[in-house]
Amino acid sequence: MLTAEQNALLTQTGHDTPMGNAMRRYWVPALLSWELPRPDCPPLRVKLLGEKLVAFRDTQGRAGILDELCAHRCASLWLGRNEEGGLRCVFHGWKYDVDGQCVDMPNEPAGEAFKGQIRQRAYPTAEMGGIVWTYMGPTDSRPPDPKFEFTQVPETHRQVTKTWEECNWLQGLEGGVDSAHAAILHRVLPTSTGKSLGTAGYWLKGTAQIEVDLTDYGYRYASVRPQGDGGDWVRTYHFVMPWTQIRPSQDSGVGVRTSTVSGHFWVPMDDENHMVWNWHYNFGDEPIRDWDARQPPYKGGEQLGGFRKVRNMDNSWLIDRQLQKAETFTGIDGVNTQDHAVQESMGRIVDRTREHLMHTDKAVVTARLLLLKAIGMVQHGDDPPGTGTSYYGARAIEDIVGPGADWRGALMDRIYPAGLAT
Image (cartoon, rainbow, N blue to C red):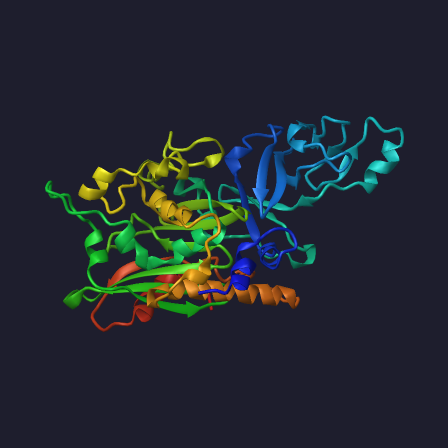
């Protein structure tokens, strides 16, 4: 468990907090590219790490992210006119480009001379993988672009979605890297209709052994489940600092080589809310098949405004107690919604001093230690883990390895096909 002081360190991400300063050393997924569908489209409110921001796409198609409140009298730039290469405040007409430079002051006699001295807080952006990313840290510490493998495949070979989760970001991350829960929380029950368990049968055989290997981007880890004479079922994952998990795709068939991989980001909006990003891609020749149709609450009609789930804490995630008795362990529709339900049920910020951790929590504990280490490194002026490029080619693989075989030797050339990571 964590002390109360450590819990506060890891869960508080606002401006000038230790965790917030560390997080600002990484590229932050800010919004989906389609949220800014065309040049000069309406601006969009974005909340990241406790900061209220506004995003817009200028006449040249460039994405900009600015402090929401105008540098003049603090009116909201979300009300602004997106026009001719900049966002113009509707209060007095001050206009800003994507770099935050004031380029016009029509209501000020000395505006032509004074405008060059005014800069709105602005964060640089990079657009790739269907995402507008932003960097919120010191200019001289800007890391290489976030070229996860999914960002480099054709648009037809990936899908990216997001949903609002109503609790602290760390609860989402810890739920994601906790492989052991899947055999319980996401269990499908055998029914009188003979419904197939599919790969769930592998989840139910044997207790998972969690193995964690540190890397310079975070760690890779594996859940190893013995299958008797059939060998071991191994699912490998990556934790890329500070909020990324790469995992085997749900398209993966045990013992069948596929070219699909999935992943998540858990990005703080503020200390009591975060956005869960979900991505799925095919690094092979075939376009990705429709993912949203299989993933409540991400299919059409399953979200409210602002990416809030239809199945949310206000309606108890629409839990169906009859379904819980007969078909699924939770009675909640959708694997991701099941995750969110248990994480949100802990409260907005869980008190981790009450925990009793076990062997299967090894990945969770290691993530916490790395995050605390990152805080210390940034405080001492060093670059935190994961700001290099070694995660670029990392893939998550699952397969059966033979009895007594080492999964690292058997799978490493597929986990790092380009040999980038150390």
